Image (cartoon, rainbow, N blue to C red):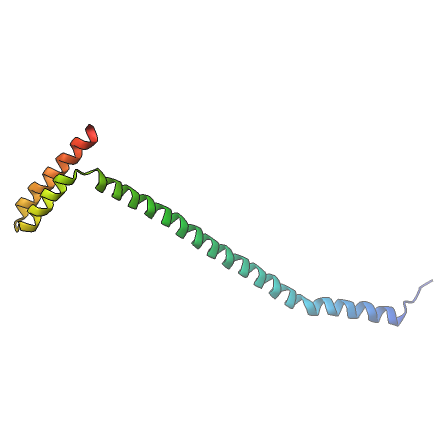
Length: 110
């Protein structure tokens, strides 16, 4: 014996299915927007982290440079500066550089 289903039940099921199908594009777009926003926020976070690491490297390089400047003998620096201010030739400047380098090397070995 065949049983019949009430038309009200079939209409309710049909309307529920239509609602699910109607909401599918909106759900897909909302998932896409959420994924895009998460990707963009991770990209921004990576950029900030990279900038922080770069700043740390720059600070370390500056510290090393200042330490090198402080390690050079003050008298040698003054003599080299006064000679370089009076000098016009590249040969004299090269000699001054050699003297400063030799003084720096003697300070690091002692």
